[in-house]
Every structure is written in C-alpha cells, then in structure tokens.
Length: 554
View 1: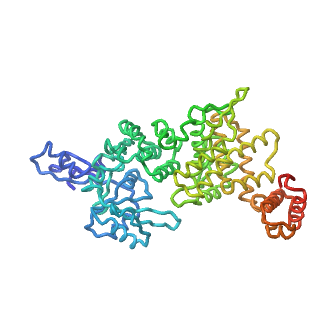
View 2: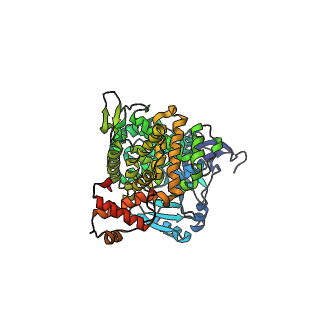
View 3: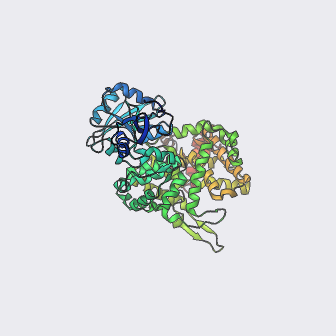
C-alpha cells in the first residue's frame, strides 16, 4: 500500500483511488472508486486499493477457505457480513458464487462431515448444516448469483445493510449501496423502490431488524412498506410464520408488534388482533386490550430475562425484579432446561410462549359485556381465545404439539389470577388437589402459564403494581413450580396405583368411560393425600361406584 495510507482511517472497509499515493476518490466497490476518480482525474494514472477493516470473522470461514481452491470466486453475503461489521457472530452464513452452488455445498459438507441438502435446484442453491457439540446448528447456504454478477445479486437484496459481500480469499468488502454507511447511521433502507413489492415478507424483516438492532427505518422505506402491506396474504404462510417467530424470539417483541400495528400491517398479517385496539377495560387495568397485550409482551421479556442463567440480580434497580429473582431465582437451571426443549427443531418454545402472550386476550372484544354497575367483563375470553389461537396456528401450519401447547397456555392463563385472588381474599393457598388439577390440565405448559401470569399482572397494572400483590403472585408461582420441579410424584404426577383392567376385575365392570373417571378420581385423591396404596385405591373406587355417577362427579 502506498505511503500515507493507513488502515485505521474513515476509509476502512472501502475501496479508494490513489493518485501518487494520495486518496482522490472512494467507493463501495473497485468500479465505483474508479468511476469516481475519473470524474476529476481522468487523465492521471489511478491505483485502486482496498482499505482493510477489522472484522469478527466466523471461525468456519477459515475452514471453508482451506476446503475450496484458491482461485474459486466466492463471497460471504448478506446478514453475516452485516454482523461482522458490528462484531457479532451470525448463526447463518450465506455464500454467493458465479456457479456450482449445490456442488460447492456438497464438497464443503463432505469436508466438514456435515449434513447436506440441495435446497433449490432451480437457483442452484445447496445447504450445509453443521451441528455443534452443544446441539446448536449452523446453516451454510451456497447459491449462484441472483443476476449476471455479484453487484446485481447485492442490489436485488432487501436492505442496504444486508447488501454487503466479503471476498473470502481477498478478505475485502464489496458494498455497492453504501450499506456500511447505513450501518453506522443505524438506518434501515430498502435496496430499491420495489424491494417491498418484490417480496412483501421483507416488511416483517424490516420491523424485526429495526427492533433487534435498535435501528430506525428510513422514511421512504416505511412508505413502501405501507404500500406493499396488502400483498402479504400472497406470501406463503410458512414464510410469514417464520418471520413472526423470529420477531417474537428477538429483543423488544412489543416494539416490533407496535410498529406492525402503526404501519397498518396487522390486517393483512394477524387480522384477529386488529379489534383489540381501543377496547376499554375496567380497573385494575390501566390500558386498553391492545396496549395491555403489548405491555404483557414487554414484561414477559423482562421476567424471562431476569430468570436466565447468568443474570446478575444485584445490578437491578427495580424492586419488583429483585423480588422475582429472590423468590424464583433458584429455578434458573430448570427454566433454561424448559426452554431448551423443542416441539419443532426450527422454532423455539420461547417464541411459542410469546405467541400465546400475543393472543391471550384476543377474544376480549368478542366477549365484552358491561354490567349495570359499569364494570366491564370478558366471560370465557380465555377459552374462546385459545380456540382462536388454534385457528391461527393451523393457518401457519404449526405442528400438532405446538398447537396443543399454545391452546393450553391461553386456556389456562386466568388460573394464576384465581389462585392469587383466593390467597389475597381468604389467605388460602392452592390445595393439593387444585395444584394437581392445574398441572393435569396444563402439563408442561404449566411453567409457561406461570410466567405468562406474572407478566399479565404487571401488564395489567403497569406502574401501579403493588409490592404486596406482587409478592402474592410470586408465592403462587413458587408453590406451583416447587411442586412441579421438586416434588412431582407427591402431587403433580403421583404414581399409578391401579390400572383399568384391575378396576374392571375388582368391580366387575365392563369397559367404558366410567373406568377413566374412576382412575382420574383416584389420582386426584392420591394427590390430595387421601389415598396411599393399591388397597385404598380399590376401596375408594368401589365406594364411588356404589354411589353412582352423580356422586361428587367422581
């Protein structure tokens, strides 16, 4: 490099034109730097040089460079390059090549002993899936250019901050749309006026990245998002679902959902949520249904963050968060294990819980009644809301397990409030039988219901929450979680003392629904501490049977 040109200048990561060792022009690509220099120095000899920039490079990049021939043209593109600029390691790596995308992916997969998939034969795109020792998966996609060359490929992408390329061999950046400048300005700008209409799912992606990076969306881009919103129903439900789950998985899901509502996107994306706006609620609610829902999302994010492994409770200045960590902090590892489980390899349980929070009051507009006293009620909104959420889950093609979990969380979300009300009014903690019934009905979703209940309370009263009532909520949460994680066989899932065949033999019964009712009644009373062995179970069943079906509803 010529004298006087240093790598730690404002030109770092850019291509510059040098005339007699002095910078006379610069650009995001060598061609841009050359064209800019020719405007003023067209008669002088120009040298085009790349100004190095310090990056946090993914450790797999070096392995891929070693696998491929030194003369093979290949670029890392998109979000992974963006993340390099801001010193993040991306879990997804996209590569662009002039040709042989699938063949290159297969070669890399073989060398890394990783899984291979021909992702899109028409676009010559192959995927490599690297599974790390901790179970995390890294996706490497190898695709041929979308267009005649690399620059055309980059210009066809969504946002300028993602229209970046990194030459693996030369270790240089190609930036034809000044994406690095927008990164520094924390601005999200569409690559072209037709970016949103070309692929409307980019509307959701813009919102997600704005929330995730705390960037602003540039005005013209916002306008194009509004104009293209009506085209969202033309996008496959799977792509919409995946973007939604990424939004809910990322930071500030409440801000993202608020932005979607303000931009007029919800009618074309999640129309069930639209009627929630402006629906008033009686005290202790301080927000309408929509604003309450956004507050619950924010508070759920805070609650889960405060209960994660590694959270420093001593640094919090919030008394209520401090109480939360004091009462429930001992379960950090159990919470981590809970959220590490998966009902689908591509979607997290955490995102599913946030989807439940988003829909937990979705039926309040349809169930709203006003009593003579003026009090507003929403009878059965939990039950009906669970059914509405199931329809949305089906529309998004969620798995049966995910759909069932979603339904259980929403259907049972009012039970935490009922427990607290009884404790507050009558000083009555949940009975053994009520704890059993809670987890019988919610199963593993019971943990999610507890967390949603805490966030729901905080989202109801906002800054008006009281220490006394918050402590009651934490007491209920601790009682439920303590039984679930520390003493499950006593109350939550007592061992079966007798099966259906034994009951039929002992009581001379034929197969039928009564057998199941008797077995469930035995387990309830076992959880309540009233039955402790097989003999007591059979004696109880015999007594209940002789009373007839109406006896205590079995």
